Image (cartoon, rainbow, N blue to C red; front, side, top):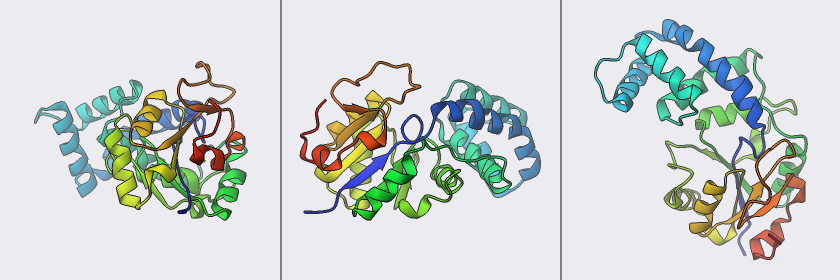
Amino acid sequence: MSTPTVVLDIEGTVGSATHVHDVLFPYARERLPQWFDEHRGTAPAVALLAEIRDHLDTESVDETRAVAALRAWSDADVKTPPLKKVQGWIWAAGYADGSLTGHVYDEVPEVLHRWKRSGTTLYIYSSGSAAAQKNWFAHTPYGDLTPLLSGYFDLTTAGSKKHPDSYQHIAQSTGTQPARTLFLSDSAEELDAAAEAGWHTAALRRQDDPRPSPVPGHTTVRSLRDLELDQLMKGTARL
């Protein structure tokens, strides 16, 4: 039998949603004008402006309007590729100079190490860019966790997390069997989509999460420590 694969969401699953909304989003939002000032005329800035024009469906987008659009998307948590891309670039600089660290819950390093030792293959699938995901795990208070992870998927490489096709694409890209793959998330819509693609699922409802628990139709736990991979892969875990 093939070894199991676990695909993890970040926000609300292995890391705090509060950290994203109260720390990371404002950090990038504040530095958007500075980023354009420092990268004016470079290939990344030119390409980013073109992407923003495409999303706004207009040719009239200068840096001022681009910053306004990006800030509006950030405030509304609209998961557009241009926003996720520039956020990732800004956060990367913050991780590099020590201004930022990636939040993970206390049990996460221990559990990921245990799963890795047991032969489980671990991937991340989050709305943030793959580069931002890697920086998050490379700069945690527990050290660099990226050696535990085999890859990263985002909106541009896999598609919407609320669509079953995205999970089918990940399975094809990694060569994993849906019946041996577990997806962990705090989002019922994402879990439903993964289940429709034939994956096993489990929901995280952290102690600070105000939403109802359990998540209907999915094994629901408070911590990664509460998961029994063998039972979940056999479909025998209690809902």
